[in-house]
Image (cartoon, rainbow, N blue to C red; front, side):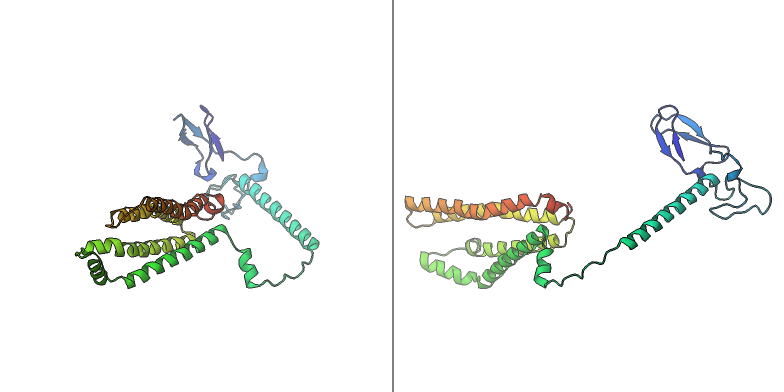
Amino acid sequence: MKISCPNCNASGSIPEHEIPEEGRFLSCPRCKHGFTVTRPRAGGDDYLVDTCPVCAYSTFGEERFAACPKCGVIVKTAIERQREEQTRAREQELLTRKFSRDEVALPPEEETSPVAAFVDNLHPVTLIGWGCALAAIIILGMGVWELLQYNPGEIREQLAAQRDEQVSMWYVFAHYGLLPWIKTLYGGAALASALFFIQQKEIALKLLSWTLRAALVFVPVYQVTEFVNWVLEPIPHVLLGYFVEIINILFVSALWGIPIFLLDRFLKDKKVTSVVKL
């Protein structure tokens, strides 16, 4: 039953069977005003029964009641609810009969090819997920292949023969072994993020976004590092070489950065966020 505070008119509801015959004292959660709520009384003999319509409790005599002594339900409320359910069931039955009469035979569905079914089921989440997974597999494969070809001892001997001086293993690793490891680790992380994204995991959107931003930062940093190493090489440098290297940094950074930036922005589109939750 619905109740309201007599002081601030805050409204709420409480089950009728939780209110005893003598009433129940309540405290308003808004203004803390206390008041007593009494159970509504059934009016008329139409709702005085000897058998409860809900729990089937019976007095087995002439004694009648408007509220069930066992389950506490108000007989009037229970009977009106049963009448509403019966009316609703009859209306639903009439609607079902009407629709069955008006039903028109639909033509048989045409068989679709697997390619057509695949195209119909394409979604931006699927396209982005498989595209990133393919790129991650390529990067991972390149990193693993370069690690298999990496031989620090042979590289060190070749550098020593070219420079007539010994080079450290740290130098060899930093210039020839670090990038394959970065490609391998990044490719594995990107592949995992793409697979989570395809499966629409809860954290997949953040993982894929972090992976793209890492690539967005790494590409120009790597290009600048290579430029600094080229400048420090004990070889003659000309002004045109500096110009070419700087143009190469800008071109490669834009070539990789612009698509990655646009893809990261598109991950915030409703077409994606409505499917993959944050």
